Length: 152
Image 1 (cartoon, rainbow, N blue to C red):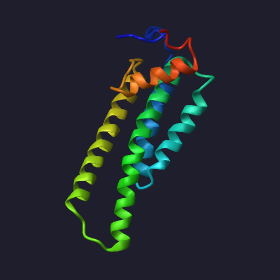
Image 2 (image 1 turned 90 degrees about the horizontal axis):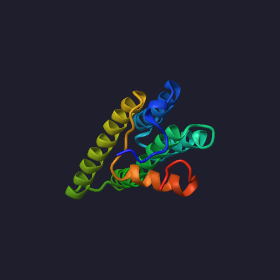
Image 3 (image 1 turned 120 degrees about the horizontal axis):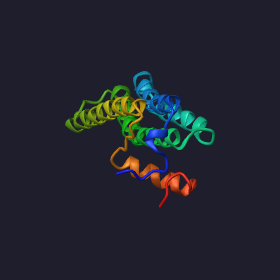
């Protein structure tokens, strides 16, 4: 379902490359900044801000979608890091709830990691990628900020 104003046939090679960088950057930042969850968002926000006005709708869409998917990971990772630090500093026992939570956030991070890799590969091939929930949320933000990007 094409719901965008850009034609996938008119996307230049450089645009596909830059759109894929939004996802690759989030993957790289996850690897480097895993213990500090806010680093992921800062990197994604910087990349999104750099593409807001001067880039094509295709690049802006994928930068924002990547950033929004990173924003969803931050609260979960922050809670996990905080909980881990409190267990270490207070010398308390590791509970079943803690283990379950760590397994869930590990799974979610792995899902986000591989989804971002997949999106980077697809956008590099000039194929549009819409994440479940984040794709529609991105469209809502873009519609609100710039009416001509995604028509109603």
